[in-house]
Image (cartoon, rainbow, N blue to C red; front, top):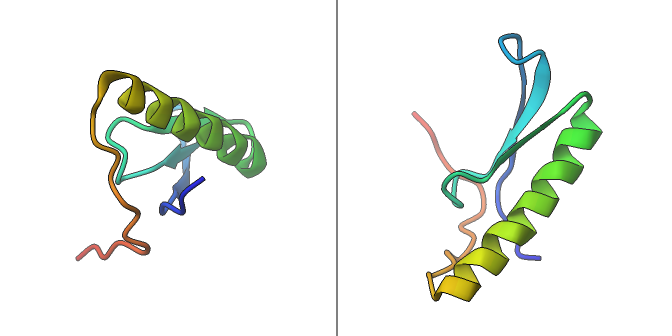
Length: 69
């Protein structure tokens, strides 16, 4: 699997760890622990790419670390 940046954080509102992949729009997962959120988002990434490929949508190249201001 390609190397995309994953942002992992605790959400008090959801009472769960959230893992987001900013370069893959809508690719988000959650879990009770950091490890489970990371495992879930890796599965979500695979499904995201499979779906994009099935519909002929482009899959962005990973850019590495994203910069936020």
